[in-house]
Image 1 (cartoon, helix red, strand yellow):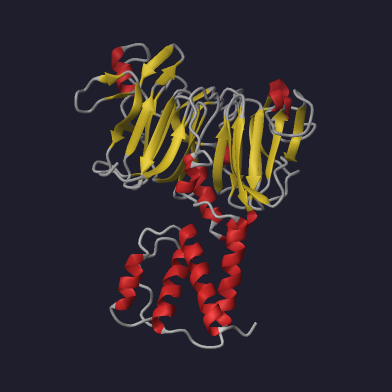
Image 2 (image 1 turned 45 degrees about the vertical axis):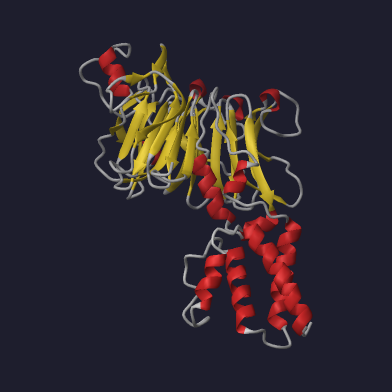
Length: 445
């Protein structure tokens, strides 16, 4: 990782995992599977041989060739979006989820087709894209004009195409604008398998596809052949929806207020609700979490789901941006046999652990130091400034403190001392020094 940079995003499917680095390289491990069994992992570009599987990360694409900015996994395929707006795919293509046509042979057991499937290749699209979302056996791409392009399995009209009558499609093999998602956009996220959940930038929640078990979130919904072929607004939830995830017959979402909701079949208590097992919940119902905590992420799999929540006080540290990052990192779909998840320990890599009491004390002393009776020395002010910046912004040691803040070489020396200091350590140091200064100069409080 010294050459390619630290890990910025992860995604996972049934039996594969993928990681994107800050420089734009992609690593994968595990293997892809098709309807007839194992396909393999990838074609090694150096040896031109198929790597059947790998227990450790293997370089799929280097940033030196194409810089990737987003990855997303379906059950057995991977989507990559590069900085120029092109979409790349690899994995199983039996349901059209790769968006690439293999003209010479459709026998997925043939060596030629397998090599094509396991080679990362560009999807032919007329317009550049700005976001991608892999669902279980399908793919969504959002163009720079906010149009929704889809391809893959459409057995329950979940991609927005009718499955009977004019224009019907069971499998969308060629990337095509979805008629079902033409309105109510622009959209922010998609998730699901036989049914699809989506949310637009206005925070409105929508659903389409298979109806049974209340998975669409609409009470008393009657649909012919268990299929809802047009997109419906889930009007019973009026909160601003930030993200969605769906698995099997279960549906989940989380809101800007830090609340999580679930609905569908409560198989084995899958929904996380205090209701009877195997009961069907037809409308979004709030999942109970400890008081004073906010939900920032949900990730669902076939038989369980993961919920990540943090103390509400941490929302002051740009939780919204952090939430968006986790959504990308946990673009996990259904039927997960192989599963990646950021544990509460590794989360500290992205969000240093800061107890509510520490944050509260930091806020209190920061207010007190503004009411000092006498002005501290320039060196003391410089130390305080550097620590405060590090506590709120993070590693700001490479940034200029400000032209009018301090003069002279000493400010850069102080700044360099703080390089690499975590927010937690900076807070503790700031509190310690501020208390000493308060005792020395006194305050007007």
